Each structure stands twice: as C-alpha cells, then as structure tokens.
Length: 326
Image 1: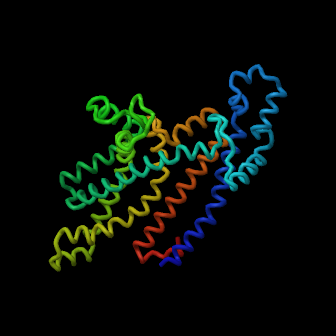
Image 2: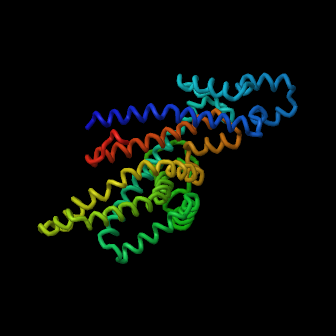
Image 3: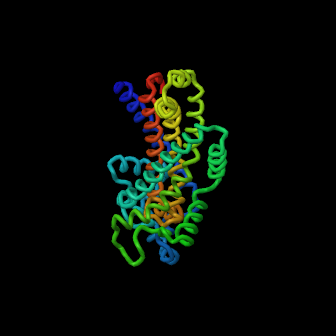
C-alpha cells in the first residue's frame, strides 16, 4: 500500500517542478509588461525629484534593470537557496514577511475548513437520510443560495449580526481594543467570526457532495442487504452508506483549496486579520513583484499539495483505485 503511495508522491513532486517554474516565470512576464515602474513606486514622492543617475542606481539595487528572463532566473536560483529577495513595499525580506503572517492564515484556513467539513458532513447526512423531506429541501436551497454569496458579503453580514447587533464577537483584528498582547482567549474570540464566515462559504460544496454520495449509497444493493439482515438504521447509515458516500468528498477536499485560499484572502481583508491577505494587497498595489512571486508560488504549492492529499486519501480509502494510474 505504502509503495504505490510513495511513488505517487515522487511523481507529483517531479511534476511540480516545471509547474512552479512556469508560474513564477509568468509572474515576472506580467511584471515586465506592467506599465508601473517599481522604482518609482519604491521611491515614492522622492523619486519625482531624483536624478536619473540615482534612479538607475536604485534600479540596479532592486535588480530590475535587466531583461525579465534574467531577473526571473536570478530570483529562481536564489529562491532555491531560501532567499526570496526583499519586499519593496514592506521594506523587509520576503521570507520574513511570509514567516510572520503565514501562521495566522493557516490557522484561519484550518479552522474554517474543519468547520466546513464537519458541518457539511452532518447536514448532508441528515438531508440524505430523508431525501425530499423538509430538512432536505431547506438545507439544499440554503446551500445553493450560499454558493452564490461572495465571502466578503458573508463577512460584512457576520459583522453586522454578531458584532453590531448582538455584540457577542469582535468585528476584526487579532487583539482586544487598547491591547497589543495576543492571549488565548482573545485569539479564540477574534478567530471565531472570520473562521465561521470562511467555513460557511465552503459548507455548501461538502453538504451537497455528502448528500448525493450518501443518497446514492443508500440505494445500493449492499445497503439494502444490510437492512434486510436486520441491522439497525444507525449502523446502515454510519457503517455502510456514510463510508461509501464520503469517498467523493476526499477528492473535493483538494479541489476546494484554490477557492479556500481566495476566500481566506477576502475574509482576512474584511476582518483585518494579520495574515497573508494584507501582504498580498500591499504587494499588488505597490507592484512589489518579489513578494507577489513568492506568494504566488506559495499558493501554487498549497493547491498542488491539496490535490496530492486528496488523491492519497482516496487511494488509501478505496483499494479499488490504482495509485499508479493517478
């Protein structure tokens, strides 16, 4: 079992190399075609009165004076060694920017994703048990509605309801007002609302997949035979139908990673969460291409890792699937 899994991981790692190279090359190609001058953005108002010699020296210091394939290659070879350059907008090493913010983004995504999987599985199972009933029609209609709702709108709605109307959760940030210390209790209070919003935006996909998968499993001959043998409805539902119905969800987990990342960026912006989103917005508005290249690479790695984990989970859960064919 573990031999095919290891070979699958090896194949995916080899395939990831050209993908990451192509993605980073595309970022530098876009930077070269951009009408914005990173030197002027870096210098700000002081660049308006600076001499041409000063600007050229600054251009050389920022490594933006050569052809973009050469700049891309220099950045790529440095990145392999762990040096992603310096952020021109935040005036910090790119690695330091990511290190300081990545943990908060991972925490938010993990909490939201866990809520989405748990809530989607429970509601999907309940809906599949009585397909066509009131609960099924209610949660299905709500799921289709939530699929069309953008995460930032859900975030604003959550702030209005839980922070302004009910006053039970803070509206944003990481610490309480007037405090710079992050405590466990304050962290949980400030994490609850953005994680809830992010999770709710992902719930419909899991709910509908579980509902369909479990509903189809309940109609299989094996499940009917289990009922005919006198097994309890709970055993049939949890021991047979749910196990078969959750297999498609394993593939869904990997495919939802890009949407999760996009939703997290919007949710972090709405709630002023100190994650990668603020750095991404800052890099985009300031044409900070070294930081953009690193963040794009990080997002690509997350997507590739999510797809790999979903394939591994599906292959290990269903022995009928040949990992050599993935």
